[in-house]
Figure (cartoon, rainbow, N blue to C red):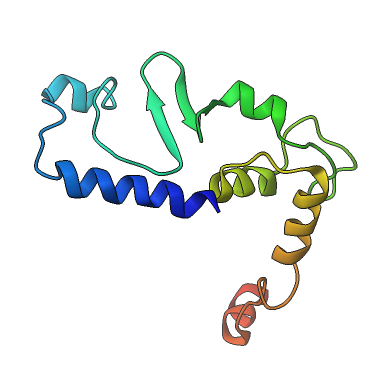
Length: 126
């Protein structure tokens, strides 16, 4: 639901200001990892010079506090957010519940989502 909204925002920016210059970049900035340079419009994240990356407006520490944690890849419990929760956040713009993360995880690990073609499986297994 929110994804089309964010995509529409990006389309509007492109339609209204596609030729507007947004940044001057020096060699030192490019060599230093583009710190402080506005160079990308993204629907899901932004890079703040002081706070670092933001995912759907949330800093990484905020994301870590809000996303569900739990059993992941063989561990019985983890203090870290589940990867599927981050996927949910990036795709929808919403913080998922533990149940929603579990459902997404189940979908991603079931057929046909996790199917590997036979010829690729043979290469992997050999």
